[in-house]
Image (cartoon, rainbow, N blue to C red; front, side, top):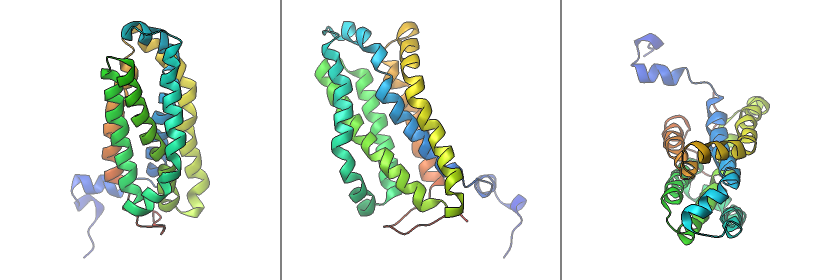
Length: 209
């Protein structure tokens, strides 16, 4: 039986008006968080070294550990998406990235920070490729060019904003907020993924209609 949109409950009316571009925006924001975290730490290294009683030069390993972890774990993301479902893996990666960010912010020693950065890198390695898989399986071919523009804008802003944001947070708050800032973004991301991204099985595309 047909129901007019205004007769539906509020949450259903909101869902009915969701643009197909919401998926690229959700994925793009996850990429933004990942790219931001790869660069935001650079200007905070001296403050982090002083807080953790470490040599500032030695703190570069925190950047290296993250990038190396991303490179090592990227190859398993396609298998994980096919095995467990792209939507589930994407949401789990954002959640794990958020938890790892909290762990980095609470770190009291360099080894603790490195453990958090490795886990962050693992989650980031899953977020980026699996997010693109979600995009390819969720958006119509006719909308793909537009979708890629929505995806690219947040991802490109991450490396640009990273050093400036890191310097600002270190100057006016604490270096720990470089990581804590990911927590509300990550929690919102998980909610949006579970709410607005369809469950995708295997390699079959389920484009928005």
